[in-house]
Length: 185
Ligand SMILES: O=C(O)CCC(=O)C(=O)O
Image 1: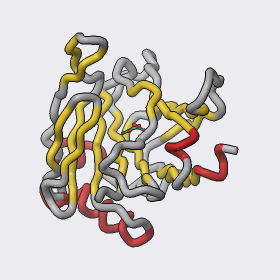
Image 2: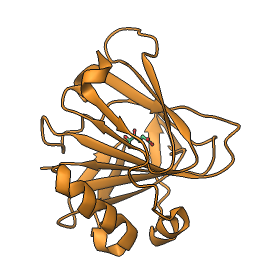
Image 3: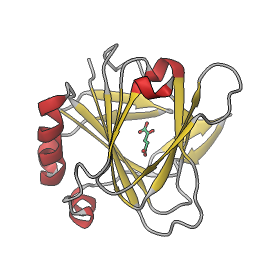
């Protein structure tokens, strides 16, 4: 079933320079609240939007998008993605090594336009992305091994039916950056 919601294409952006992208981004460390406790998110983030200042609130963090033009590399990717998909914001996640992760969740935030696609692009270290059904206790249905430059598109319906995660992988010692382009209201 999952296959109808996903399009995975390897090597679309393999020419992108990881170090350059990494240096162009002013990474932020946010905190989140879990069961009344404040903890640091287990990854760094940064939020961009066109036009600027679109807002994004997730896991207790408040973010205002800055212009894509602050990062020429990101802007170049944004222009290319926009040729094929309707997107206007991008959340960047930076996993410093295999200790950093994102737990199972769906990208079904209220800021998103209903029935829009989410375009996810990965750089740097290879990491596994897992999918499982949202309702009930389902096992992992599919894993994708995401490498530098790979693109994975989640089509409308995916966030309604599935959750995804990037689990810890303690053997991974190098950083990974992921970009998720979305369409916000
Ligand atoms: O790092 C990834 O590939 C996934 C990021 C993600 O799930 C998110 O930003 O919501």
